[in-house]
Length: 270
Image (cartoon, rainbow, N blue to C red; front, side, top):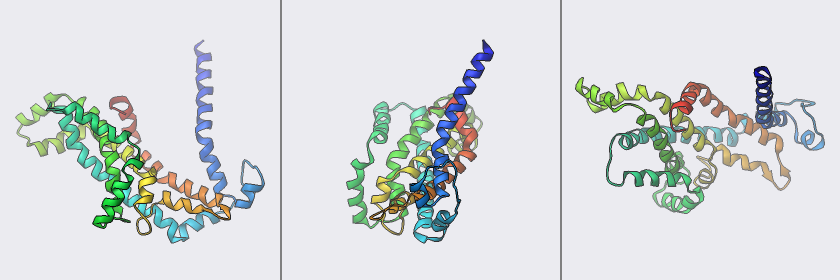
């Protein structure tokens, strides 16, 4: 009975892996083919593999600059989101104050709101102060959604840390900054890793705000990919190559925080 159940689970797991990896494999397959081959025939493998699509991205400044711009504003947003959320989450987890539950719920409603709602206010504000088409403009716009998410995740981790640790540290003579950096942060490093991962991913894939608030100097890769649509049709091969390269930064981040993500699902509010 146990052996039969094990076989069923194994088959189910294999089917799920195939189902999950099939779109990624097909995108890699398309990226190694020409548009003519993609549109003319159906093939599980590239008949005449080519790296020309990747060469286009790495040699065309409008393509590779899109990746650089995206990495810049995503990194800025992730650092600011985690830095701002840490003290806010600590306050929610350790103190009770007037309206704390309502404020916490209000933070989450920002994450629930569609980005299109805030598009016009951001556009008008940034146009007035001269922040349009800058990396900091997109990074700050994404704070509206990532900071509430970061606070929510970190608060779950911090609430799992006994308050006696705080009191013991104060008795031992730690100031609050020293306690927070040397004692408290190491205890929630898994939560910080998980939070940084989600902030990175949400900022990396967001399109509407990033495309509207930039034009040339800070244009992200998600907006650059729309260039593949033209009057002559869709450039499927280049788009597929760009999609494959878009997955790489996320995969690298997952690799570095993989242990923290596992702990996050087990311990925190993820």
